[in-house]
Figure 1 (cartoon, one colour):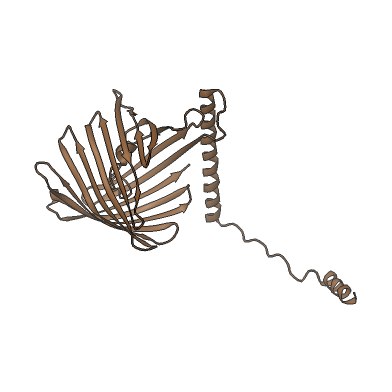
Figure 2: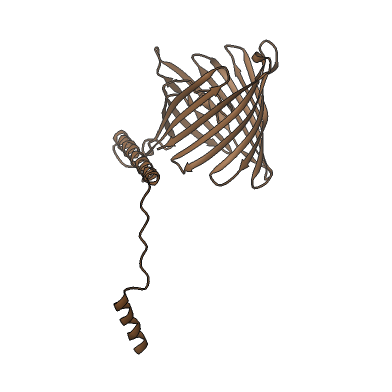
Length: 310
């Protein structure tokens, strides 16, 4: 008891033995980071409230507890090519999901044609050319037939006069433990290019927990131009961390105009980093093109793209 009393008296006389350290002041960079994240959350919640109101307006009652949401992407891409100069282009894609109205119905508004954007790696994660400005709205109807995902997506293009394009796609993923196969078949038609067919059979091989190898095989036929284009190549992927990855690619291009021949090949390095999950990421792609039009002389280029999600 005397020991406890003496310790208590000593603390009262001299104050507490340990004092709480003051929290460091927030830097300008940290303040901007917090403001950016908070603003993104506010905008996302506003989009979701708009979707919920529109959904309930259509059906006049709540059928499911699953909240209606609007997923939006703002994509800014900068493209530099030797001999062609610099191009910067911004694209926006807005996809509301009205769960009360129709569970499998998906509506999209975008400043570019997302259907065309998904045909091939050169328009996807290895993009090296600007997206064509093409304002329009797409209605997506999705079903699953066993292991095959079926999507029918008509699109209205806001041009004068209005134009309509259609897409019917079949896609699946086959898992063979040591590798995966991703077959895809799409029938499409547009007012500018006419009917066409896109098909691909890509194989992804697991080399280790860090490395993977993708064998790319793609073909695209445009009926109006009677042109058949083929892309083949290899991409080595390297996972540097949970948020950062790199890929090293060698792709070859061929077409049948005037006869089937090699049209060019491409060497590229892609750096991808996720900064904030479901908020912000960016990608840098330096590449070297060898095209028949340039007598297969190398022409350097650089793509920088960042995407903001709401």
